[in-house]
Amino acid sequence: MSEAPDDTTPDHAVTGVLHPGDMGVTVAAACSGTVLWASEGRSAESCERAAGAGLTDAGDLASLVAAADIVISICPPHGAEALAATVADAGFAGCYVDANAVSPATVRRIAARFANFVDGSVIGPPAREPGTTRLYLAGPGAAGVAARFAGSLLDARVLDGGSIGAASALKMAYASWTKGTNALLVAVAAMAAAEGVSDDLTAEWGLSQHGLSQRLTYTAIRSAPKAWRWVGEMDEIADTFAAAGLPDGFHRAASEVFARLGEFKNSRSASVEQMLEALLNSPAAAEDAG
Amino acid sequence: MSEAPDDTTPDHAVTGVLHPGDMGVTVAAACSGTVLWASEGRSAESCERAAGAGLTDAGDLASLVAAADIVISICPPHGAEALAATVADAGFAGCYVDANAVSPATVRRIAARFANFVDGSVIGPPAREPGTTRLYLAGPGAAGVAARFAGSLLDARVLDGGSIGAASALKMAYASWTKGTNALLVAVAAMAAAEGVSDDLTAEWGLSQHGLSQRLTYTAIRSAPKAWRWVGEMDEIADTFAAAGLPDGFHRAASEVFARLGEFKNSRSASVEQMLEALLNSPAAAEDAG
Image (cartoon, rainbow over all chains, first blue to last red; front, side, top):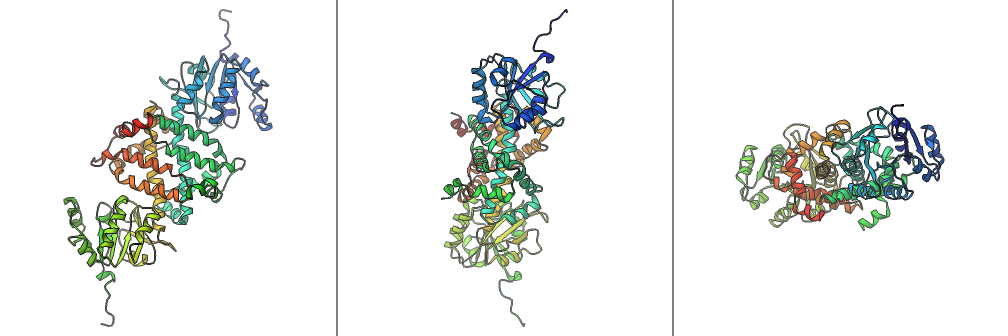
């Protein structure tokens, strides 16, 4: 053979994904080569999801870390630093990709734990159709990570000239609008309900803010069950605003709104009425108004 | 004559409008009967605007108050209480309509100064075309006020069963979304600029948030010059949220954003770049980041 294949070419690549949840499993499924996950301590639902996506179970995190040359972290933002610490402490010597919704400052702290680090972020829903979901990557090793997703349902994009922090900053900016307006909309509706003008507001929205009442209903159905996961993300966004010298109140408030919706964590959906009641009748609400 | 017309029928009605600015002059022009304004202390621009709308100059506020049976207050929210106090102190005995963007609590304080009071609010742009602009009215005298606008460009609506505070609450809820999202959008763009990911955000918005970049440009052109007037309105909205036990941070932040745009008060418009620079380079920004 004129050229010996090295172990980082896609055919022989081994990528570890921590942890394949609803979003992570689609990232893992889009990755070429062998894709490992670690079943230890995960739910039966996770096992089923990973098996369905054709992932290989490494067993525990130590085995995954020993076998993989790239590890991609996809978890709720409040768990990102602890997960990175666990992987670093397990002696991982490959390229660590943090793809979570954390601030540039948080991602730089995580980066400091690894010799090879790529800053990543995912924008869009779980990647089940082409064109919906992008994995943004920044840092010296970004192209090598992106190569593993070539031709897949996940559109991996290297940020032009982006240093560590750029992919996270992009995610913070993007979600600060999408999730920030979700939280605001719920709070606006709760305020109208508290003042007894819900029907009047719905009527006026019907005249001049087309689609807003429908968006409120959709937020109850789709967002309320996920709100608990967004508390940490709103805190990371607020920190990012503060670091730029901008008012952080929008997302401190959004964090509080999502925290009050935490009770819908295990629900399939909520009604607008249930959602507004959770907002208005939380112990924090009574305290604020008192 | 079988029936003597009383002086409150539309034909003999005398309405005072304080003060006919860009919005107020269209409210005044839509009002039937004699419509007074008071030129004392007002700008040449106001005089021209009032004359153009066919308003009658009462001279000073005392003369207006003596002649009118309804006085409608339309002014920036931070001036609403002082204006009401001036009218009450001048001995006004008719029906006072506060149509400003103030909280239910503020409007109830204002109402306490008058024996006859109607809570009002205006939603929409200055009323120059049919169907764009509504004057919401609440309280026992609301129908009498609405009658003066029958068949006009201003759609006056009495809130069904609405007590004093309902029209103001509706305005607070409505503007908390429209102006709150304006402020958030500007802050998001400033955060992206501070982190060097503006172009990446614009590209992602082009893929998944249609019209948002255009809205940002439109906000710079149309909203930046008016931002100074919205500082007080955001404060009133934040107070309304707090009174309902809801997080007030969205609109405390929006107030700060609009305050930083105060320098565009006398501009015809701003560019996105100018607007973001004003946000990021304000003395408050340096302090927050420091």
